[in-house]
Length: 466
Image 1 (cartoon, rainbow, N blue to C red):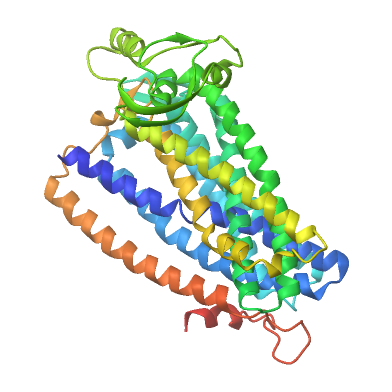
Image 2: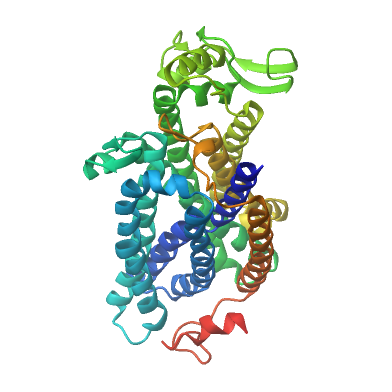
């Protein structure tokens, strides 16, 4: 019971935290891009957009920090056996993330917020790019730790602990670079879809339509390109996953028996174990995804279970099939949906006719609704990646059942879980209120005009919380 509650608590808190991380990474890049356009073209409109979406970035950045701190406590409180086992491995990348990436982005974020009007334009522009770089490199260090859980490298086991023997092997981990590319590109998509959705809402309210149409054009094109790249890196991850974690691939397809020229299930209604009510399958597609072979061999759940039981000992090595199957499909399905929406939006925003984007109210409402899509796709992707690895917390080395804290009782977990739920509910309400307020505001007047937001003191940022 305690293990189950520990897993639920960690799962809920990290999913909540991961709502903010991709948006922070992506918005940092888009805001820096907008400010670059303003600087190079001497265009006040892009500067106003950079300040507008910069407010959303700042709110989200703060929420990411607050919710991320909770994860650190849980490693020690609820997962002490795990922390003892991996501490020597995780210490290096997590220390690098805190000492290098976090301080880099925090320092230059302060310069960007309070340096407007005090720093030169070049230095002020460089500061936001360094913030964006810091956010991205922070993801690299965090994912280095996660990739090691998926595919351990550069270690040896001494006294039942994993000891680091080669830090470069950890950062050269093939799983890391596939995961990093896919995650960062998904973060760019998340921010781009938010920019498109907020711009669409502003156009629906007929506020600065021309300027927000420019933001929608930039963000929709960026989203379409990044979605193609995200889908491509996801395909590359699938082939690597079939090599390193074949059970996860089999669970994603609910493929119970090994097959050559395996078909891919687009949709299954009914029992996933072999007696479905209705199925839509694409012949040979699973083999193409797994190893780029038309008649390639894909191992099934039953055969993999026998092999893993023989290698690691008795027990079930099969994850929750329905969760892996549906989270994978929802992630992929939302990705293709966003690609269609982003491409259509970009085409409308570029087309010079009566079908201009700002005049298509139904499309604009769809874009507002699609703000939710990247967050849902990110969540389903995380669920698939982490739950599909079960029963392993560190693949092939440590099971989740061995990782939790034996001295923490069920009552303590229930109490902390309830506390985190209340805390996150309050933080969520505050975040929604602040983001909604910032997104509904009008653009600041151009710099230099009376009432221009941002005299270098940062009052325009602080004012959001009053």
